[in-house]
Image (cartoon, rainbow, N blue to C red):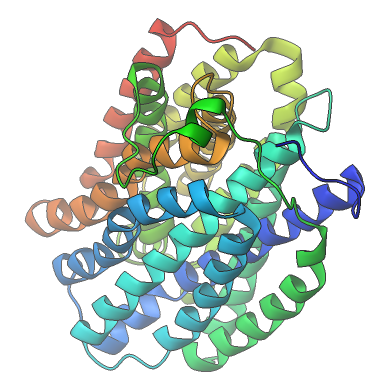
Length: 388
């Protein structure tokens, strides 16, 4: 079935889908900016926090099969809307937790809602990309990063003014609901389908084939590094860099601003030098940035290192989602869900592993895990044949 654009123009669809990327990034960065606050409130050590953080990606992973089968049955826009509503309700609920078990329970549900929002919104982005002759996919993720940057800045201000997470998350949720109510009418109504998917029985487990598995492993390594930055950047600046209170969120802001810049430049770079070279360059930036932050754990060098990491992760996920969406055997939504089955394990394993290693050794050196991930990603990309 072709994409229905009778109601909305391609330009309106681009803005409508971009708005949901904004909602996703703003909500997630708002949560990430308050992790240090919630750790102190619940009196959690690094290992306990690592275990708690395990709950969100676990919820995301266990519901990947459900999202995959829903995308075979229903339009991605409906699933995206339901996921977005739940996402903001659960974000608000995080402000009310009073013990670790409540924290983990809400995070588990938060991960489920995030999954139900993010895979459909990427499916929507692939649908809009088909309406344009040149690459625009990276810009959608640039919007996600800009919203994250804005939310991190707001979060830093909220922390400096001692505003509680409850009020912080309530204001974020109210803003996001307004944006969603305006943007929803300008989203892709019908997803592209492959013949194989139309005739085949819906499957609970959309495991990737060999080609998609390689793409998934690249995304796995990137998302592990991203998860480390999202969940641990504030803690790293607080405990290792010993940044003053006003600068605890500085590393996260630097990471997100660099990531957003890279994603807005990404489409130009992709059209200029090709997908493979962009992926290779991004892998190198991640490794160099983490090495700098580890070697010189002071405010300025750490910020510069986080900037390099942000530039590195900027285009990898947009490109892997686009590559999955080009699958010759599966519909875009199903292919993306299939790759996500592998890639989201990076979010599942990366941040908790940092907590365990930090408890045994040192948070500074546990960041070296990200260096190994980025080097592995570089090796995978170099061996692959990728058409731009």
